[in-house]
Length: 362
Image (tube, rainbow, N blue to C red; front, side):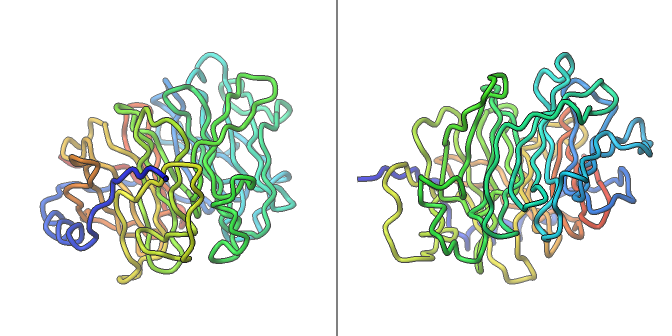
């Protein structure tokens, strides 16, 4: 009999908490830079408070240094990247925790055949060096959507790679629950090894577009994009052992999608929070638990939003694995495609329309 890690809460109660909390937020957004071509990610390198790296979907990473966006790209791999599909392209970058000394960085992109590649590059401190390219992992994609796209280093120093279910609507190949398929999964690998092996951490994911580790607790927060009705926030607690099953395509959020038994190999993990599509919502964009200094009222809150509506919310992890104080923040971001972190814990918000914002307030 499968074990169940219960971290769900009632959607109606959360909606009420959201409405109650919205008026009390003193947070605001400050524009950092604009004019980017379909940016999908922004981040900083460990130890570097001066630079912000912005990933453009067609295959370019640009760098903003002390308020100025350099004309010459930090990395240009447009010849390697296929971005014909709306969800394809160069999708994220992650810098090695020891980047200041080893200059290693990792990118997630779909190649010209539409398949996912996780690739390592080395930089000289100013630019990434295309000739240092090393392929760590590849995943064949049956469709041009639900490719995943995130990368994150965990507290264990390993690189975490999320894959979508391969697309097609409703997971027609039942890939997310099939442990023999690499789709709909979360893997970790050690890039320090000559031939990294992808270790399965979790399955039952539809499209974990963005996920991040809480830098203080080590909990992993995953925003998994829904199908027709429910967007969900999942949490994998620090220290979790075994194999986690996030439920897709048996469940969409907490609702049954396909009436069948989930794969019994792992522990079934219920969502921490779900929200529905009324109000123009359609696709969750995951963020971070904020631990910065610029906005004291945001500390300890997890931020997330919706790509279609641009609405931004935050919540706090509550007792007994439940969410608390869900709050609609007093600003929207058109085409909210990603969040990011600066080196000192500041939070970035990325509009697919070309602008990067920073969270501010009291």
